[in-house]
Image 1: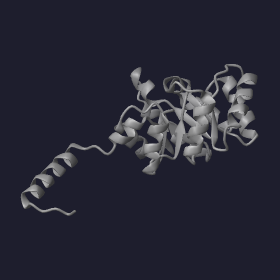
Image 2 (image 1 turned 135 degrees about the vertical axis):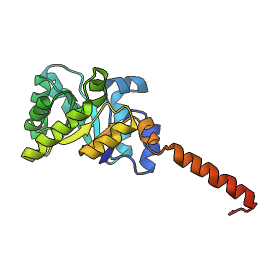
Image 3 (image 1 turned 30 degrees about the vertical axis):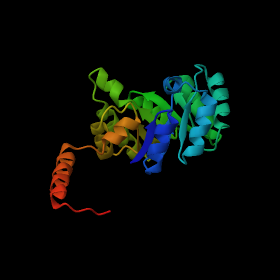
Image 4 (image 1 turned 120 degrees about the vertical axis):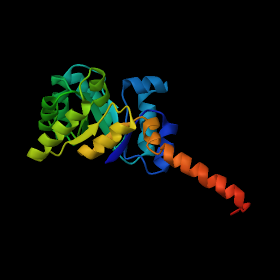
Length: 217
């Protein structure tokens, strides 16, 4: 499973990228706002930093404007993936841009039917939002499983990019189901290394080592 980092924080991306944990990056208007930076400037910096796809989202609501914004965003770098919402206008934009060879991430997906439409429209990625479904007492992981089955049934090439990841269990479960990609905040990815038994085991080793009075360096 590929790891995308869901942030516009360049320093956080760089830290994970140095460890080989970054296969791509996703941003959205809220993350750009949080960064406090110009969308073109920060997106270009991220694209220069990572080799994989960098999702940059349009903000228009009508197809013609979405297409124009998508074309402008695609000019930032070769690894730009234009992000569009799963609306009818967004699907039109997806079809136009994908036919022209631009990668497209269709976001805000909350049903298998929506995911099927996105694949038919040529989406590179479909982004089902797990956490937001969990918030309304719907199991977001069931959606990942449904999309996996449908895409496998018909050999769709659209990759499942699990989004709205809230926990390390989301990461594990998406990997078990077979999501192609998970996009998660840096903090969630780093927490995957934590386990209380690892900590207690290390504490015990260090206590025993101290008793030896030895040094390696």
